[in-house]
Image 1 (cartoon, rainbow, N blue to C red):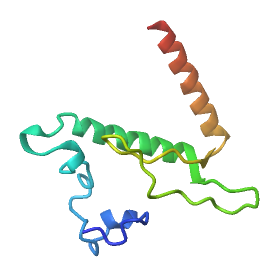
Image 2 (image 1 turned 135 degrees about the vertical axis):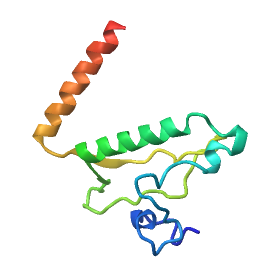
Image 3 (image 1 turned 90 degrees about the vertical axis):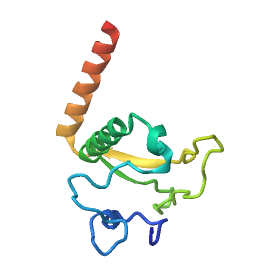
Image 4 (image 1 turned 120 degrees about the vertical axis):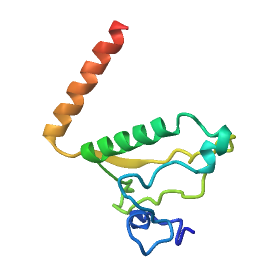
Amino acid sequence: MYPDPESFRPERWLSKAYPTFREPLTIYPNLKNYHQFGYGRRACQGVEIVDQELFLVMAGMAWAFDIRKMRDVYGNEVEVPLNKYTSLLIAKPEKFEFDMVVRGEDRRKIIEEGWKEDVVNSDEM
């Protein structure tokens, strides 16, 4: 079902050559029918909200930042540990270092203004 599952391959969702491809692309890929959210009557009621929020957060991060692998003191990329997960009931990747840089001064200003506005609004609550 997932050829080369350990590699970052967005085309697996966009190219008809992959068995994971589904149409229409205005709907797929999405989080429905993944076991983490259950099935049938026991399916998570919030899966659509999570799907939309995940899309918006990831789009915002891609707009705002260049996200790359961390580099060591010699300039070599530090590999991300792909097989290190927590032992919790809902396993998630263990923490790892990465490099995140704002994509320009204009975006930095927008991010900082939004942060200040959010802090002011949270203080009023």
